[in-house]
Length: 300
Image (cartoon, rainbow, N blue to C red; front, side, top):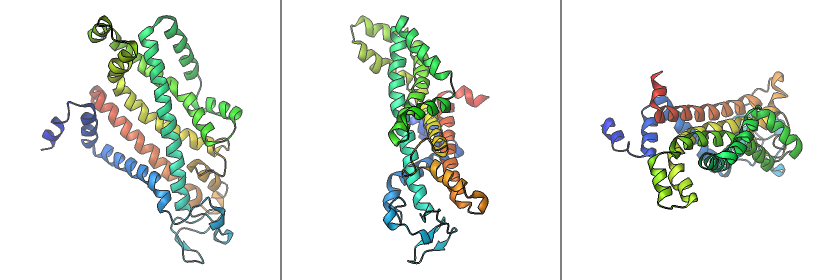
């Protein structure tokens, strides 16, 4: 029955991806975890028992309570509270929303920019290709986190400034991948036929070349989202990413790290575990999609 199920869907890219995920128990669990965390990030802040960034609802007497403690008004802090009296569970949900939002948005915009430049470089070639690829080589010649640090040192703190910095350090990865895939497709018969028929360049780029470059883009996009989430957490942990007034898993880890040796482990350990589970799950799904789109990788 399972073989028939996958056979019926193998003729589409989405079917191949879904079928490939379901054939791997590890990837299936990781995909479920990713979906659960995504839904938590979207709807969780509306369901939490406290807005941890509303100063009017915080009580300093509830600060540094261990997991399972109860406040004077009967509220149970299942994961404890931090130094400001914020419910850690609520703070983690809000931080998850910010971290995922920054990672996904920066990844999508970087994908769009890199895809467009990669297609243009491959299709037109010559000086345009040389100029774009020299910029790509320059961007990829430095560690991502180092470039992001330099950019934020100039831009300052803020959600959109972090997003802009992550876009600037990610687009080159997509551009190189798309250019490589487009160069393979550029000289095939269907592209030459489209040019002979007088089809416009935008339609050739986005209607013919782009669909055949989607498989590597999907995989790289998943992995880059995980990288962006990790980079944002690292930048916030170092104190140059998001300001302390914004929820972020990296900021929660940084705040808890200051008192980790004092015994209040829950302030940094729980946000750190959530970040680890999120990034690990995305990477597992991305690796499985890469095996599905390139079966030779699974034979190693």
